[in-house]
Image 1 (cartoon, rainbow, N blue to C red):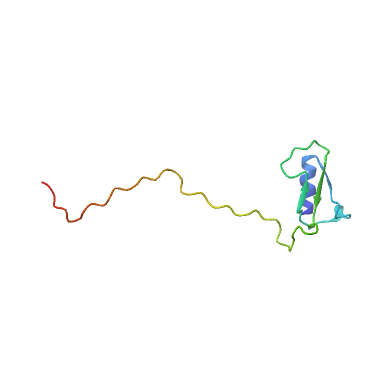
Image 2 (cartoon, rainbow, N blue to C red; image 1 turned 30 degrees about the vertical axis):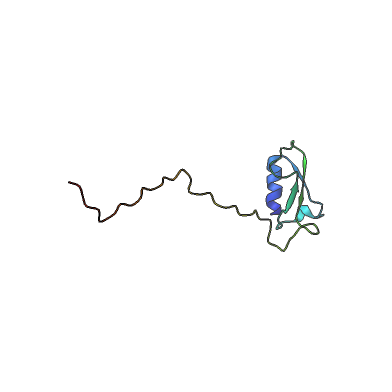
Length: 95
């Protein structure tokens, strides 16, 4: 939300700019859909991080938010041993 974005930016020592929200300082409930520089990039203290609250033309939208695609789950892992062939249940026992 906009409030969380401002609090996080303040805690990290960066400034926020929102070109699509001139009243950004008053926004309370809005969700960030993009930011530049992207998340995880190191920026110096006092740098400006630009955030957008609306999708640009042709970027999607529909209120569903940004979702990561699901990836297939990994297999059971490890090597699997091939089982021995089953024995004949009617084989006579050697005593």
